[in-house]
Amino acid sequence: MIIAAKVDFCDIMQEKYDPPVDGGHIIAQGRTGRWCHVLNIGPKALAEQKGYSKPITIEEAEEQILVKGGYLDY
Image (tube, rainbow, N blue to C red):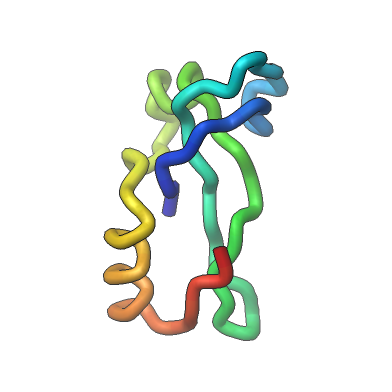
């Protein structure tokens, strides 16, 4: 799941941005049920749509997590 956010680095493309640009924080669920930020994704990687979902708001992420289970630590 990707939460829309300003990012200063893309972990996928290994690119730095100064100033930060519109991108996202990829969050994933760990073994304990906690959903947390694991990677930054920049606009170029998002535009290429390599199977990534579109960024959503934190509120939308919270709703999805309620359905999927676990809790958000963001």
